[in-house]
Length: 405
Image 1 (cartoon, rainbow, N blue to C red):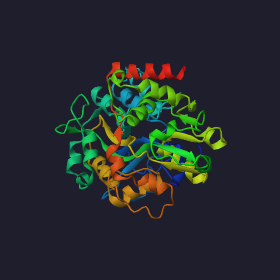
Image 2: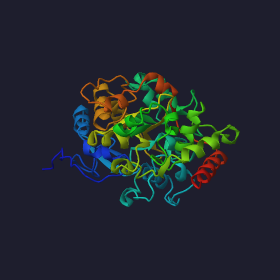
Image 3: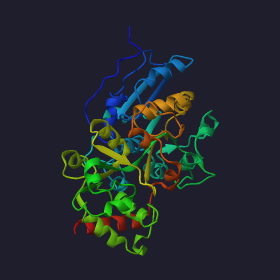
Image 4: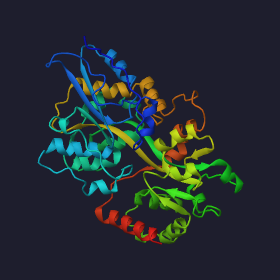
């Protein structure tokens, strides 16, 4: 007989946001697959590796009123999931890295291609990052999830999250638009620093402006992302991460040049290593990378800049050619149940859009302060929106110019 609940392995590989794997994320392709005949009802989900705790899948199975074959296929990178959506929509369309891929936050250099064996058949649901949502809608890679509005827990979503996924057919934010996605976890860009080194300077960081302080020359590692680096400077100047005409911002280039003197390394993959070995004293990075490091290295602390920061979100989307079934909506609503949302938040070390005030008293600091964001800080924070190609080119050109010194 087939074992309905295969044991969840605990892989050790590390990739984008993959420190979470040790916390029990769904880890191997097509685990926890129910047994049954070929005509049995099935639910196929491709998800970002480590973004869903493995232990909630049996709980979902038990909540169903009938036998369903569950196929969960974790994928290493959001980039690959977006490419897979392109392949499902048009198998003749090349899925090599294109214009959209170059400016996506969290993207690793190199590419681990999505499973070729699954290219011909679309999954019922796929993880997609919020930054990709506009492109997915505009390219007609996904379909609306209007039935989501009828789910029990839709009303429990903060208005911020409802607004994020309501778009017109070009992917632009529209309060009267369709619901195109369902958020299930989120995180932010934060500052991590060496406690003793910064205390020896007589202060600890609280906001972006601290990155320009004396004593940090060649002691900072930053993400190699124009939107993130220029964005934090814009935030310091009281502007938005999503400013389009950056050439009109006084002092922006001068501020960037001053910050560049503080920077030892720009990297989106290895920005934490110099901090760990002592080459840098402070780094800026993504909360899902940083929180696991805090648990291993007590000499570090982290803070969300009080003037606000950049936010990312993982969303469920439905590929265009998929016939939407009842179990698709049931899975989304299951992820939004308060107790399940708390498990996703605590185990994957991320925030929950459904439970902003979950009790995290069982977590030690500094995790708790990063997962229980101050409401005012959150109000001042922003998603990295899609900018016009001309604006993106301006960001890239200025960033390259600054790094050249």
